[in-house]
Image 1: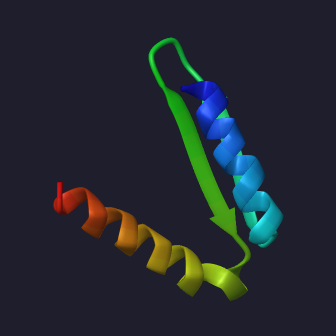
Image 2: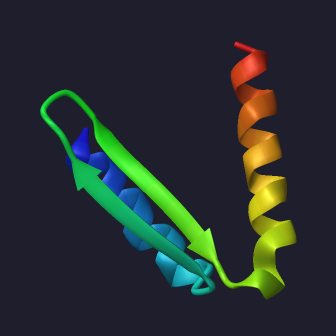
Length: 58
């Protein structure tokens, strides 16, 4: 799973350079933190909302 997360981060960094991604591997999980400068907060908020909506549809 860690490799998949890191590949995703690499792809997203290539198209959305305003995101800052930090991955932290734990024993049973991979944590992904995403940050943006204040000017891009609305973009991050929209991504969070879409992710939450997609999770609710499952």
